Length: 350
Image (cartoon, rainbow, N blue to C red; front, side, top):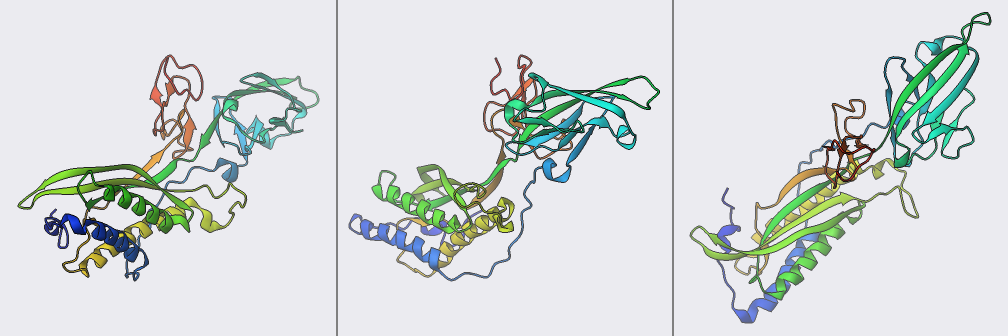
């Protein structure tokens, strides 16, 4: 789609070498005027961000099954739900002289363990779940249905997975009419633009990271060759739960702060278009090209973790630790197949 005035049609305008310094300063002033300019009326829209399945909050007790292993999901560095050493049916019956014994990936678990505790009723609870705690856990239950009957033995298996919420962010691209590609003014402008964008989203506890900045000579239709700056930057939210003053307010939720940051960025670029339309013939050498701002939504998992709605239907938007037979070497979103991988959380395929 062709850009409207004052878009690509004005980029053929040229300045003399003697006025470049003044007009490059004008480009910075132009950015600042867009930052502090009048707030235009706009219609906002809410982007629904994925929410991980907070098992530790929604379900506090997990029961076993005598037919198959039960999957349990525990968020990294959080307390786990109570994993019961009974089936749903046994929860409704009395048991005489029950005994419980838990075995984990590293052997027998004792009740005095500082990381994994066993309650008096046989429930397994993790106080601070770590990645290395992921694995298969087995509970051996022995009890009498009645005083007269013989001891009944039952073995229940659980697969306990570590997971974390996806790291999600917006990635923006924008183009600017530029000074010659070898000009120092482009470098100065890039620094100023990045600083202004960071200030815009600072009060919603978000940050801007420059991913790529390139200058290219572009042959335009009926407009000769133009110099253009191509910016790619990301907008993500800081973790407000950490630091000297942890944030506990509902407004601290990243799913609320990130859409606000996105709207602030879009508003800033719209203001640049409005400001540019008031400059008449005195255009700065570097200015935003109307209509070039593009945005994509991106989410990522840590290496060794991935999202799999088929394998983990009860935690469909969680970054769950990769099972044996799979791996994730980088911050992708899925665990890849690797038959030689024998551990949970593999980051390489040997």
